[in-house]
Image 1 (cartoon, helix red, strand yellow):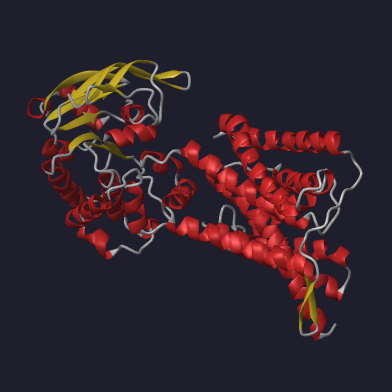
Image 2 (image 1 turned 135 degrees about the vertical axis):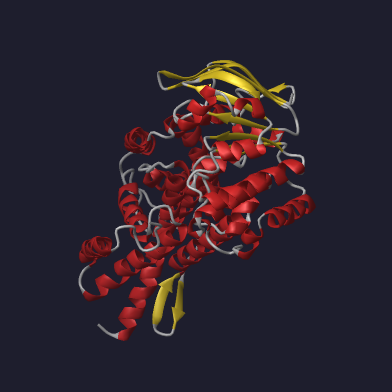
Length: 234
Length: 286
């Protein structure tokens, strides 16, 4: 298993946000976590990146425990994250944002190659190279957030509701982008509420409801299930 | 008021600017990286001056050695402050602010206990006067101008081109986004505190030779520093330079026309006026 969460519980303040979540992902796959707002999806991702501590349980990446490790060590291990509000550096230009994605890397040649790889995926970013990130359109900002995450050369790319606020036509190309990233050998953990996007990219799916996994399985079986529908519609 | 006096006022103003900028940039750096208004920054400046005094006068060793030690000691004190006091209060700016007020009292009284309350003075080795036409500027003031602008220039280059400089900029724009790129916020906070406090030490060591030293000498420079970064735009290094130049020149030029007492009054009045029309400061974002 590339990523495996066992009985992970997380408190947010005094409230239990996530209760005994168990989840696993094989290398090379796209796995999706779906659920309504407040179900604990973002909190789970924050715990994997080490931004939020877990109360109990364990998180393993590539067979090694990563819970309790600092975020920089987790990024170095090969996990990159596209956070929900993108968290770009708004007053820096596109190129500087991308280069900061490679902050922990020292292989100059590899960084150049991956930069080209990002431009193949998102030619628009190459046109906007010197533009400030904050002045990009919503779709372009999403491209930049994904591109920046790819610059760390991750084995696992986690995305938190990347479709949020995007027009349907932009979501179409987002689905293609995710499939292309996956074809390049990067595993993707996708947190979403958009059923259309999930059904086009994911192979497996977990349903999170008020902090608990209530259902898991193959994507095709899931899409006809009642609680899945409930999760999507909130 | 003739031309010579005005030019002389500009030179004096540039001296003030170099002095203020060295202090203000540290305040600005700490504010943008750690999100803390570090009110005891003026005390770092004061300690820098006292360390030079100690080595120069008490021990009778050279000014240069004392100066180097003062700068390093100020920087290291910054690292200790970050690790022991400010890190536990990260994300709690109000508590950190009150803490830094407490540190003002702690530092002033430690120095008072060790060095006593009588004003001290030492002389820098930069003697003599540089003459440009009929203008005169003492060498020690010229050194402050040069040190101020060279060091801030170096800081600019560091932020623009060094990986960790870019990382600092990233933290100031989005802390969580920076952490997700693998940027170690603790490490960069320590670097920011070292650089900011070392620059305050440089200012203290150089300016200390111009005036007398007292344990409360940090208060004036803190007020100037805060005015400078508010005027320039909070958290912006370029803003701190611009703000420092404006307030420095006001302090240099106003005494030419009226008295030096009026300089601070007029200076702060201009700051308030500018902020009324541009609340984010001259160079601030949003």
